[in-house]
Image (cartoon, rainbow, N blue to C red; front, side, top):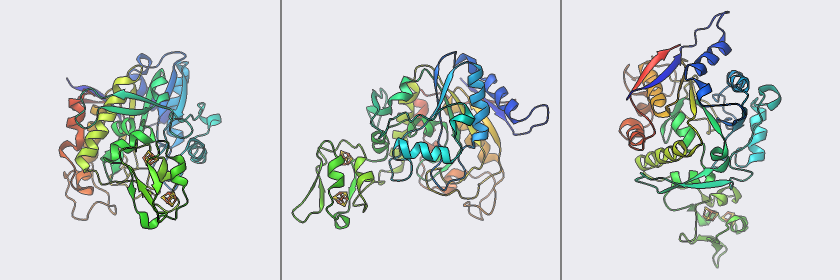
Length: 370
Ligand code: SF4
Ligand code: SF4
């Protein structure tokens, strides 16, 4: 059955300014069916890596927080630690970066609370009943402890997943570092022993004792002991232990959808999802810069079905005119899929068919303009 995706095309007026349009978008869902008085409400978003400008602007998040406060819920802004080494690898650095990017509790009316704890060990493991790649998912515990959820996503391209929207925000965004590692890789970290200076920092953080130095003081690993926590990447000053990005793209995307399914089926009640089709950059908000957008700003879409929502956003971006100069090639032709043009070797349907088999939602949708 087709799901409903509500859409605002950014037209506004003095009588219907942005904050009123955003409230109308939420009420079309209707948000009050999903978020009630006193609900501890996880507002899942991405605060943007340092150097990125495309992340959601706090002034667009505020009207949503205001609506949640009007419902007398207790919203908190949340995300999880990154797998890669950057400025969001632990809750303290991450919270400070969120503050520098304008996510100030005193202004927004909601605190920042990292759902996976100080160092991404606040984790709950759940099963993935219909997974073809994975049987269990390692999720940020306070995503599952939250009594309600609103998932706000900057819709854009992504070098590994093809696109980033609601499903990726659920899958990668709600996983602990260990969960992120399991989506990305098969066999634990990649070692470059010639870069090792024998400092032992990675060995100290490796709880199962998978790492040790050989007779030449170079790092070695026992893959049987590695549980894939990802702690060693953040400890190593020389990248002698690093992320193994080599997992085949289609398998990575299937794993990601299986994580999205794990979150979707284990949160306490169905969430509301809002995708901002603004500054549609070719890459995600993790890479330290924002390239020129590939299409004009299109609007903001919302649904209670994250699969229908992402499908609708992909279609809207693909139907929109291309912007140049951008990462899209000069010979890009109208109607071509922008996401598969930017990133080759993507699986059919960008993994959305797998999401549908996992019971996340429907790829069929009806777009209703507000
Ligand atoms: S990923 Fe975790 S368990 Fe595996 S080697 Fe690194 S620190 Fe040890
Ligand atoms: S942290 Fe890096 S440099 Fe230090 S022992 Fe481990 S692998 Fe070698």
